[in-house]
Image (cartoon, rainbow, N blue to C red):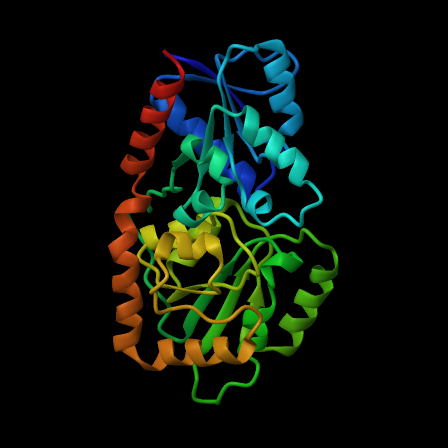
Length: 316
């Protein structure tokens, strides 16, 4: 079995998406029998797995310099595929030297430049739901926004959407996630103080956050862009329907014809969609059935098999 070094730009202890993904991949690779280390000046893996093509570019360059004959695998993130052009040169150089490129969903794979597309392997993020999933509350129609508060996530759109609902509605938004851009701390606190349908619980251990989400009626994704959101895989695995903006990361998993999309930044459209989910049980069932159809893609066995194949390709 191989010794694999993982380069991850998110520091130890972080609960951001990159670190969550890196830790899960490390666990999968260890269960496959490989030895996993974290990239540093002393690391000497037979294979480098670099998460984030731009931010891990220095690690890729250093690994290539020290071990010119050893394979490099680069995993793309949402920031890579949605970058503003200022780091395009770094991105293309990292993709050029990579032996394999990991895309987290189909649309991400399609956005890789044509000359590098033969290196791409799609590995969808998986999730094993807890055996005793919680049941939804009966005193309200609770929906979950799961993710750190920063502008690209448009994190307070769901709160805005439920401000002016009819009194008969039982919709309630619970938001889970820490603050990555400081302005949102005060905005979230102010929203919670003035909006009785909104509750922000801050940053929680990932397992606790997922368990809360699993007990909600819906996962609400309000992002302006996404690469491969683990929250959607978690919701699908827990049989929680999703309503979302049609970002590439979500469409690449749920499909273009998924019925639960609303336009980016459109609080009125989200409000109408949430009310429809609350009042139309048939429509809510259609969303759940659509998520169930893609559920095999987020099965841990599927991700484990994809990793086993990839490592065999790269390490004899």
